[in-house]
Amino acid sequence: MSGSLRNGSLWTGSLWLAWRQQRVLVGICAAVLAAAAAIAAYYRSGMLGDLRSGLFDHCDRGPIYCTASDTGTPLLLDIEPLQYLGVLNIVLPVIIGVFWGAPLLGRDLELGTHRTVLAQGVSRGQWFASRFALAAVTTMAVSGALAAVFAWWWRPAADRSYGLFWYENAALSGSGPRVVAAALFGLAVGTLLGLLARRVLAAMGLTLLVTGAVTLVLEWTHRTRLLVPPHTYTSAGSIPKEPMGEKWSAGNYGLITVSGRRDDVMNCPFPSSAQLRECMAEHGYVARFYEANRAGDYWIFQWTDTAVLGGLALLLTAVTVLLLRRRV
Image 1 (cartoon, rainbow, N blue to C red):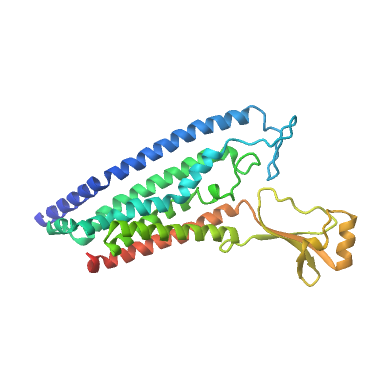
Image 2 (image 1 turned 45 degrees about the horizontal axis):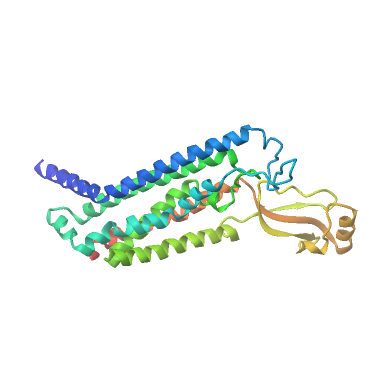
C-alpha cells in the first residue's frame, strides 16, 4: 500500500512539475484559440450578411467567377482572413515542434535539471510521459479546435466561385483531421530531436528543417497527385464534355485514339462542333479526356495525410521512448 501511494505521489509531483513548466505555453495556445474564434465569428457574420443581401443569388457553383451585372467585375467574399487561419493551421506543426517539442526534454537535458527530478525516485518513463502527455493532449485539443473553427467559418463559402474551393491550399491542408495529425507530428519531431541534440537551440533549428521539409513534401504530393491519383473523364466529340465544376483539374487534357493512345488537345483545338468532329475523324480520335479529382476526394486527401503524419508521429514517439534509457 505504501509503495502504491508513493508511486501515485511521484506521478502527481511529476505531472505538477510538467504543468509548471508548460503552463505558459498552454496559456498562449488558449489565447490563440480564443482570438481565432473571435475573429472567425466576426468575419463569418459579415460573410453571411453579404450572402443574405442577394448580391450572390445569381452565381452558379463552379470555378468560373461570378460577376456583377452592372460593372462586370468579379464578385468575391472577404475570405482573406479565412485563408490566414488556413495558413496558421498548415504551419502549426512547425510552430509546435520548434517552440514546444524541442524544449520539452531538451531544456532539462541542457540544464541538467532532469537529474534532480530522477533523484526523487521518478523513473525516466514517468519523467517523459508526464511532460509529453500534457503537451500531446493540449496539442490535440488546440489543433482540433482550430480545424473546427476553420470548417465552421469556411462552410458558407465552400466550393463557390466567390469563396474558397476545397482544393486550395488553405482548405485542403488547413482543415480536417490532418491538422491534428500534423501538429502531433511536429511535437514528436521536436521531442525526439531535443532528446538527441540535448541543446534547445540546436533542436529548434533541426525541428524547423524537418517539419518544414515534410510540410513542403506533402504539399508537393497534393500538386502532383502522387498519393491520390486523379480520375479520368471522357466524352465523345459530338457532345459537350462534362463540366469541371467543383473538380480539381490535374491539367491533363487531350484526345484518345482507338488504340487508347492519348494525344495533345491542341491537335483538334475546337469546341463541341462540326469542326471538332471532323478533326477527330480525320485523325482517328474516338473521344476526349481530362483528368481531375472530384470534390469527394477531399476526404481521401485528408485521411491519407492523417495516416502518413499520424504514423510518423507514433513512430517517432516510440523511438523517443526506446532512446530514453541511453540518452537520459
